[in-house]
Length: 498
Image (cartoon, rainbow, N blue to C red; front, side, top):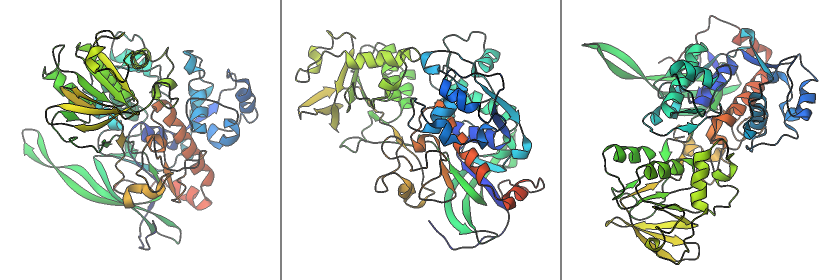
């Protein structure tokens, strides 16, 4: 990824590509908001409590994160994610509401100048979910440090019950968070990054050149309307953080007929069909393909209409990698219900679908575990094949292929494949995340580059905050005297320039 071109001009210490919850949380930490362990605080984990008491004068950013992570267990494979989650929400897996032992101080002298680039408003992909009629389980897992989600919700509406909120409310919360925490000056929204290349900057030390276009409001057209224009920009960065998420490009099955009109690849296409009144209890079944949370949302939404559902997925219902086997039942009752439906299917694979749908424990729902889609036909039939090789033809009204998504890393050479755990495969949250150091989130194959969030396998906001801690801690520990001097110069303008 080397490029021997030479640039001149100021170098931004950090550019974050992506303004979803990952980028927002990292911006918060890089803006001088610093976590300490409160003097009178106690953590329910005695081992972690003892370690936290060893150097109480140091902020969490200054401590040895690898040492603090030793012996901790949690629902993430990233150790710093488990650590930070345990400190922000102690014992939350058990539905307990222990207070966090962390005390936050604003220390502007620790701030690292940075830019956060995003296509839309702060909140990232959550704004694309605003139309959702479903609610998501919260349990404070989607909140960011320093602003309690429950408290914010109480100000927005009277009744906050069952810790639930709509995606639209979550998107609004993230946007409000950026404003309330005075982070706006670090955010350049309406920006699309088109290239990230390795160059030599104002010295011999290489840096990154980030280029793209930014939507800016131009001349007024009258009636309050303005003409927007795309303005090219280029900025040099000592460090680049990839925080783009993975919701840009829906994954496809790659089978015949997948482009037929009745085959959809987005939950929102289902919602549009529902809003148009196309689905009801008299409809042919809706086929949902996939075994993730979005597929579960589709099952719930369709059953809410009493419309019949076929549900096909490749894994066994007992597979530990299945997301439902990783979620606490108490906090995610609706998803647990879907998992029960998937598990209690009494249908034998050699029976015809219609023979048992009425005798199932869940009427109008029929699951096809360990099945794959062979092809879609123009007469709105789908051919499924079991692990044993038996094929089944089913008639459907719609098919929703909800098997995940790929990140849009088109601004990197070969879409960033060389950065993956397996450099021969596309980057994928589940199958091939970006290879990073587990305690710093540094990208193994790209010096000066970090990755966080879904790109490193973290789908839950609850755990992506650990990536922000790892990166902010590493940046502060690695700063040179020259960088400390540069970062302290308030007169430097780090804004995106054309």
